[in-house]
Length: 359
Image 1: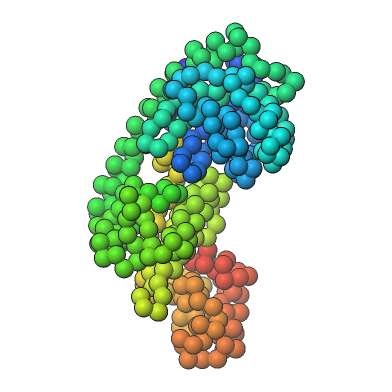
Image 2: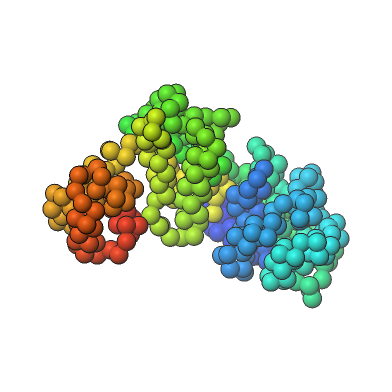
């Protein structure tokens, strides 16, 4: 069992398999490793549950200490404290918060044995095994087995976190040679690495800045849009699919616009490295030119069609394209129909996805 967690930390095994083994050892049907931040759940790995369990957990406010006594009480306990269901008020939590109660009932998670493994840098990592209502609370012999394994799980967590930190250091080194403005960010906007061009962009302060190590735009609304783009990219990686890169345009009538494109950083079952996205900043004009040339080469577009395609990828609609090019909206729509036919797409979103994937 200990070796399975060590292998997971070193990348030669699976955290899910190791957690499943621990749940079997202790008579539980679900094993869990969860990360809790100040306002988010960076990861929540639960065995023998569907992928949507984490989304539903957060939608039911299960991550909030005011709702979930396991989070409230377990989250402030000293590291490696072993607590069973008798330490919590889950039944009362479920009565006071029906959505959370429905989540507990849906997955039959009435009983838990948990331990906080690490309290570090605003992140708490917790280990748990969960049993159904009929199975009852964990028995004393099973609890002893759990307590014997928990320190080794913490050691494995520390090992992987050290490896991931080396990964960020390596990314920072790579960024030194990148000529574009690129940021490696967490879903909360924390910047783990940035290129020299990104440093200059932040120093200029026209569109983006840093506040306590986190990206911030000129307004709270624009900052929220940036964070949403990062969260979408990270969610795409965890979901195992790659939709169009979220794009955010910053700027108004008094500022030249800035286009931000977020894409997920590859990685699997990671504490921090997986919870990061690559954010590229460029002017929409640069993106338009690259998209225009790429679309023309890919789909054999005419010059006029390629120009329209570039503006569509830059985020403009038919009316805005018509105003910029000085032609009628009807002509622009005719170009768009031919572009869609040649690219074999049915919408502007699909076109953006197809071209962005080749940039």
